[in-house]
Image (tube, rainbow, N blue to C red; front, side, top):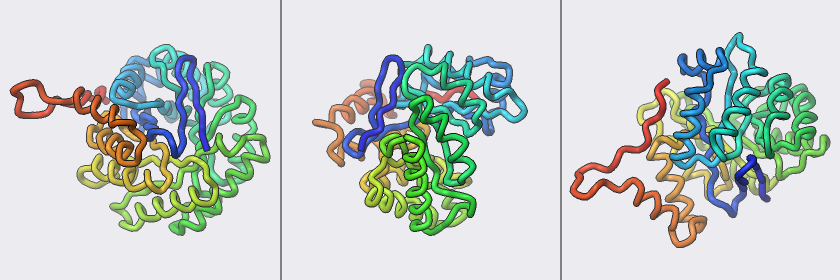
Length: 298
């Protein structure tokens, strides 16, 4: 099953047969005071720099979260869409569950957008699925509902089943529904990574839809967080994980994904792996590898 997203200049395909898709996570004002203040004032300087850096580091799409508390999110998100699609060629993922923000931003988007996200809650599905259908967008469905987040993969599967069915009722086909099996911090409960992975396997086996994770959440509060993110993605890919909202500026994450793509036969002749290694090879005579792209200051 293929989920096809488009910008005005580029098409990205998410599927089990295609290379893994990284949705760059950096444009998010949570815990980024300077970015939040800029967005509040509809200043997109830092957001543009974030987008460019992530695409240069290998992001296939850019997640755009403009949820600054107390600010005019509809106007900010619309402005961000207008600016960023002139800044980078890749498709955008509009990260908002506010109907007014999506209604403001989607008409300005040139292509087929991804919406992050809906949950399995009836009121959320009934509120957002009509606008997703109206603008021919795809959507990420998060596997929790009114009962909260279950630790039982079978319960999460049931929520995924509900989301896919309800989307179909509104005319949104299964290929336009990407299921998020929920990644929670293993520092709080060491079984949570396994729960997310088991749910990936079940969703892939029963529903066949594409699957994403906010993989960076797994290491929240733990040392060497990028290593944990990379590990979760590598373990998930053979089970059916086809995309992740993650930070491509972390070299450990980028290498893990490219290596796994090669091992899973998704990098013909290892061309992408070799290109990455050439790009990041140390200069002749240097003892240390070249530094990865530096994330924009927060």
